[in-house]
Length: 118
Image (tube, rainbow, N blue to C red; front, side, top):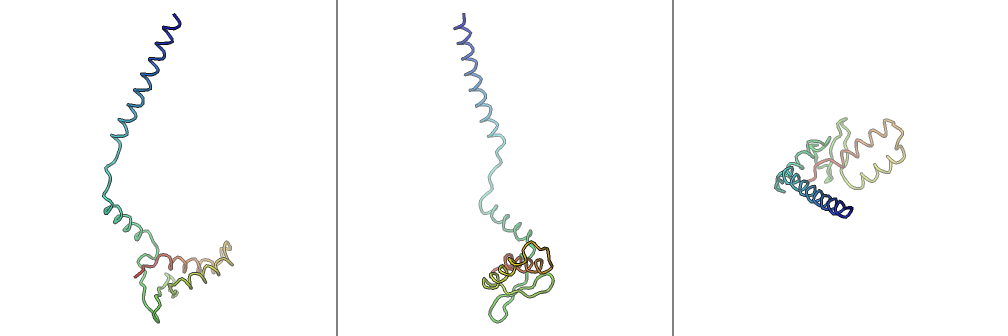
């Protein structure tokens, strides 16, 4: 008698597992969203990245052959790797102080990172 119940229990357990996996696979197919073409998604990502930036539309101009731009406060910033390195070096000295100098340096760094490249 025990063997009959054991076989019945094993069969029901097996059937339960098969149906549970089958049910899961059907739900995945129904909930999948259609994939966008890569050109659409990259164009949308580029537009949202430019829209979300503080200086993504900054006016970059050449001054003595070096690109420059102005912060929102009107300070002129040279957009170059050397200037970026100098600003980072200065920022490390005042990092975490919450001072006005720290905010100005961060604003200049922000401009260099987000200004449009030609």
